[in-house]
Amino acid sequence: MKRSLATLSSSLSLRRSSSARFYSLTASLALVMPLLAALMAGFLYPVARLVALSFSGGTLSHYRRIFAEPLHLDVLFSTIEVAFVVTVASLLLGFPVAYLMARLSKGLAMVVAACVFIPLWTSVLIRSYAWVVLLQRNGVINKLLIDTGATEGPLKLIYTQGAVILAMTHVLMPFMILPIYSALRALPPDYVRAARNLGAGPIRAFVAVTLPLSLPGVFAGSVMCFVLALGFYITPALVGGPGSMLMATLIGQQTTVLLDWPFAAALSTVLLAVTLLFVLLFRRTLSLSKGLNSVY
Image (tube, rainbow, N blue to C red; front, side):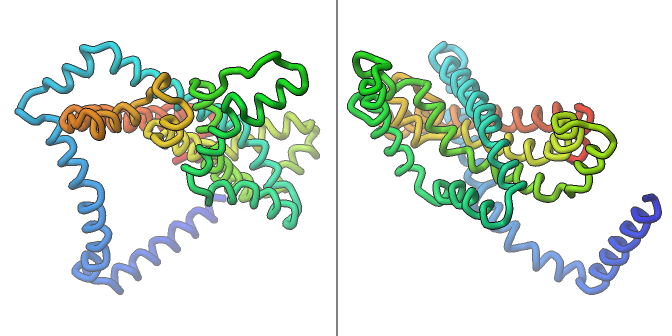
């Protein structure tokens, strides 16, 4: 094992040294310059302008307004709560699908993969409107409940927080399935077979071998789902209505209805800071757990 690592390290060193001889410093800077320019123009400059706009007037008045009014903090905490629930729901529903895709034959795996990719390629707007049609008072779900005798009248399904969580989970689940599938697909079946030969049952082999080695995919999918859920706008606005406002909806209201751009910039900056904080917490928490060193 040590010999293999030494061989790999020497190979990488030789590759780096040969690359360093092939490309001069000027050529390396010229190659990376388009990427740096795109990053500056498409991300760093807009974020810097956003942060500068939130301090318009040279004061912290917009930030004081956020933390002084309970409504804004309630919306922030509600956004974090919904993002967390959606991430957990996507993990619980997406892991079995990814495991099934990794264990099926190639033809059947393609069928399951098509069921994952086709919704992913469909517009989020169309999928959100589909949930509006399904969950409305005269929708398919209410008619099914009434016809089967489960309820006497139509239930209020649309414009609730439960509808928001359901629709967001459906939209974001492919972002959880694909990283987990990639991690499970790269897992050699000999590991599980060896655990079974040593006397482990199917559940023990899954918990001791498959689950720890799939955690890099779980980590990547959880971060993507949580970060995307924090900034989700279309689905909560259509399915949740005004009663379940999230941070993205509040920012959109400030920019399109009230035209208070400095306050919207302050809200966006707070949301960006919260997102970065949770990404660091995810990484720190998972790295402290046993068996998660492969995340790095």
